[in-house]
Length: 304
Length: 222
Image 1: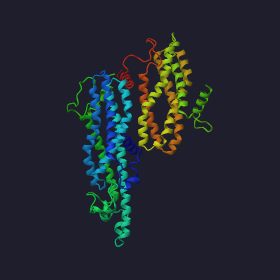
Image 2: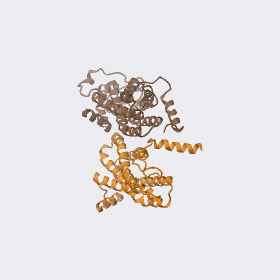
Image 3: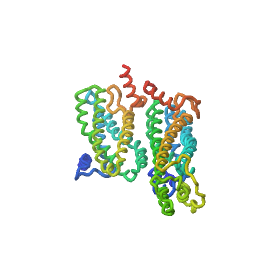
Image 4: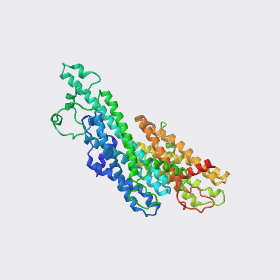
């Protein structure tokens, strides 16, 4: 457990995603221990959320606390599950060389960052749970907390992806230079500023470490036959960078939307004190309408 | 006592050459406790000016001011720590933490200096809502002035990494958000003339922000 906490700490400090490490083709994030810590953090914040209904009903809704503690980690993992394939596919499509394993690892690290932030806001949520009787207020407070955590998590993901794109670009350029030294017959092709990976790709692919694969697997680059193309939409490198960035940014928005709606599907997390406990509520409405309604309730002078 | 005052003076002049802020946590906390208590006690002396002096209320209020600051501080700390780490500022965290604590102590110092005004106000006006408002103004003044201390303490940090600027603002938002509600929960500080002296109000705790919205809506709706 301590080791896993240390791993999460490394991620938070950015040590696990240093450009140097990325350059070596490693995303240094061991998943198994990390998953444990992430789940623990999720359970903690879920319990903080559920505390409101327990306190408000004078201890009548203990099940809500348990349910929230179970459902909160689930919320993150399910959102990850829904969005992972698309991130992988689009990331491959724009010519990034992240393997499926490293995309998964990166996403888990992102969830780790988000949950660490969320859990650190837990004490504030509990404090307001104790002192507030208004359900819409608690709902909005939790939405804001989740938004802060989600924002920071996604910022981490985006920063790392951009870093990867940059590092790959540098690597590609270095390799291209090396390649042009080897093959002096056709230097114009490889040493032109906008290096087209489409042409000199064979050499580059062979030399590029595949990002995120286990670092100590000797001779892996040589063993796999060099691919002849790297991305269906790939043009030149600058274009790829720009495109990759745009795709990642769009994807981050999608992730946020899915996460928000997922929290609606899995509701109740806080548990209205006026309603009996259920694990899930009927399928109706959506997250955004409910948030708007809560704002209206709050302004419309309800609760107290 | 003399020691305490020297420390207090050093804190107020921090950042100027030749003056050093107190360094140990115990020194800072003792400043916070003593001066916070001082203002709280004056705050709770309201009853004395309108008929009956409530020593117990003074004692309670005196204890509650440092409590208010320290508990809000503690609640806001975990997220501050995590986000600092996330922004790559972990190595400076000790210094940042100390700066925040010093600013808290500075806040109580300024409050204590404003205490005579509060007493004078109580002497001049007997209205209870006006007393609440006046104390609010004093707290606001002290908080803004304490920013001077925090800004001075944060200057070397920001020079080292501009992101500290972001963290300073983030801290203020979080801390004020928590502290306002904390102040609401820890009522009464002044002691309503009609109500008996209590450590905490018995009625539902409520939510400061909802009260504010309610008052605003009432104003808007007429």
